[in-house]
Image 1 (cartoon, rainbow, N blue to C red):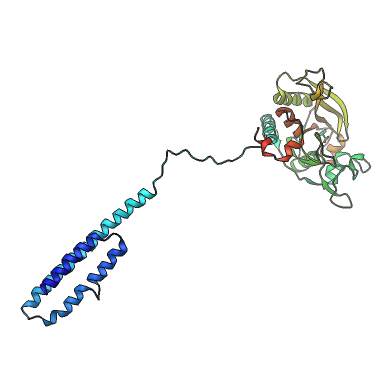
Image 2 (cartoon, rainbow, N blue to C red):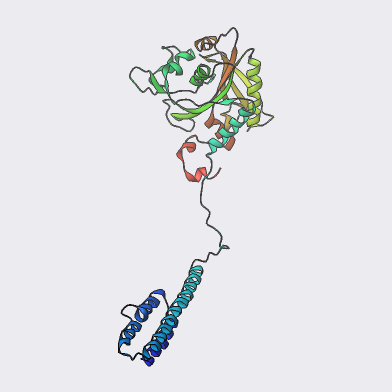
Length: 341
Ligand code: PHE
């Protein structure tokens, strides 16, 4: 029996030290120490020994058991360390490899221009207001002193959303003048950019959807001089300090007096060229002193308060700034166009 135990010890220690992975090691543990293992099998024969031999063999058996146990334990530690080293090697990151840059895009050129304009007005103390694109004809027309029989209300000009012509896609951002005064009261200084819709055929300078920036200032003692001073300052911020402007009489139902503002063509300096269609001037916005009827309709006393309003086309501004020749490019979302800005 002594030889048997010694043989188990030496075999076990050799094969355990050679075990290459956790599964093989566990199999060896079961083979030697398990309930049906080799050591147990030997111990079952203890009964056949003489009373003198029994404690001697018992002690030897215990020694073998603990030798095998600690061999399993230490080999297990060795394997765990090997596995960790392997894992570290497999998962090595080469931090010196240049990364792949994710394409995150950038601001649309028109919104770049809009943000610049917002910035200019915010610096002048204006608030930015937002309003609905689906508007009531009351706000789009009636409260803007544009009566039922006005040609701008024609079905051929306007996208109505019901038979009674009560709701429509707003044709201008001017209804925001009304909403601003009704909701905010006066005094007020605000701009409101947004989409507007008209039944226009698409061509290089027209689109049934485009963007306007509305502006409104109402306070005590506001005059045409404020209108001119502010708009001149804004235009010179946008187009450069030497820009020449011209205020030309015009008509809008909701302003009186009304004007259109032109800038002298920056390409030809006023001589006439393709950019200004030979005119020497480029129209940039419509404006005027808020009509007393409009003020009164919003609960503002025109004998106490006065104000001015203006509206400019955003696409046209962006086209001028980035020398874009065709309005359609702004909406086509062609990546080859957008990537240029
Ligand atoms: N709403 C006018 C338009 O679309 C522009 C405008 C706004 C004119 C405010 C005067 C005052 O043409």
